[in-house]
Image 1 (cartoon, rainbow, N blue to C red):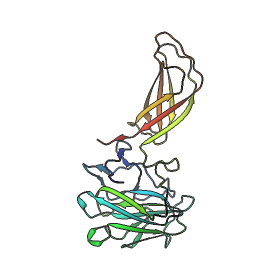
Image 2 (image 1 turned 180 degrees about the vertical axis):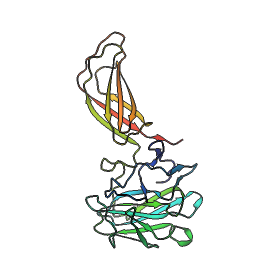
Image 3 (image 1 turned 45 degrees about the vertical axis):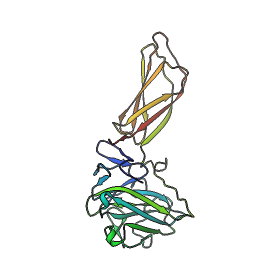
Image 4 (image 1 turned 90 degrees about the vertical axis):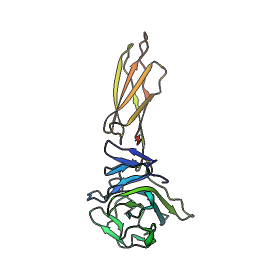
Length: 275
């Protein structure tokens, strides 16, 4: 991620996310799955002029399919070249269930990884710093690790993160899961399609339909389109409640009444950029 600030969006009124990355936390959690431990955005993250200011317990991670690729290098840059942050790794099995504190699951260069019981994660034993020659970390995963979160957290205090990159060996092209239907996090755009059989609409009449859009939050930008045979049905869409978009169809014809057959209604939700 060349610049996190440029890819940041508002997940909600208090939460910020980054396209292509999962938001992660070192706080106590009861979750045990990849989906339950990956977030589209979290609070405790603030936008600055060049980066994102992360509270100590917050971070961002790549989510990688590691069934074939096992070795990665993580590089990061804090605003102004500051030292700070610690390596953060979670390991998951083929069923995307967390592998808890299993010796040998992950090894890292230039640091001893420590198991963090509350967050079910491995964290670096030392702050990443140029003087320690550990700003770039190499990570090696065990054969049984099918998926992994690999990233950075503040841990010792706030960090102002500007860039984060993950490298692999040239013979592999591991898939990144963020933004797919399997793991809809690190995602700014969400979509849904439903069939809508509008009632008979007289001139000026309206009809409402609530559409479930997972990940939608109030304040998101919403659009709707109906595959119909007339241009006189105007659509308005709004993020009505969390995970719900309300669509209103209005007959704008001054004289004609329309009774359309079932048609496909497409709804799109876009998270707001941070100005």
